[in-house]
Length: 308
Figure (tube, one colour):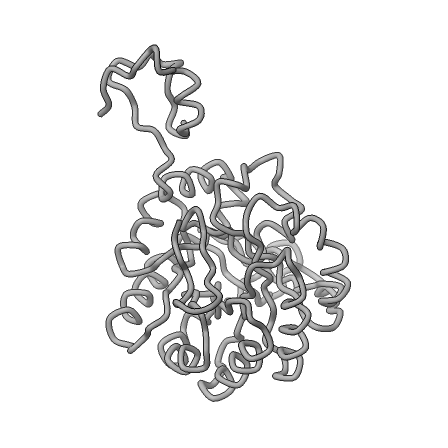
């Protein structure tokens, strides 16, 4: 078990330091046939606002040479409708659920915090801050949300503004800092020929987010844990964030293209992957084998002959 928010009365404690990032697995109602959700530490939901938001018009996904640009407009039915629809799913989920909310107005944050506080199926809340936000405005949003709920508040920082606002968010009560949200970019839609702006998901984000985690851990006087996020597409990239000082990581677009690898990362960082036996036959081991499967093949009366 690992604590991924600052010490205090209410702490988010996870079985695995690997979380599913906001926007990649819906509200916990998707991916059941592709992922064993109980292998992950937590699931962060799709973004939610206090009032209903409609989906964007036009192109929503633009393929890039290395990644994808996504522009959805954060469609959702509003917090009350979302909570009503998914409350039972969250209560029965095999892992903690973190509701991701979008920073709009401080009074909206207070209303959202009160609603979230009443939900047993929600373990924490993650606040998403917009790009180019000032430290003062970020502080207002974090304070408003943190004061209205007893549940841990994670704050997802915009990548290129993380250094400027991290300390303000920490001082305002953030339980953890997520570094960082997918950066904004613009690309030409090959079908319509129009330029489209949106969030960029790509392995190329990893070195930039990794550097920011290291910078914040070394140079900013933070007492809060950092959760690394951005461009994780391999086991080593996830470990890199931990080595740079992150307490946990969030996996995003890898879940869309190779869900089995996302699960493998979760198992690996939790210490639940089995290494290959020296004398294992081809059908007795595979890279994603976990402890349960290993024990099924090799019971106590047939002990392993050694590991490598």
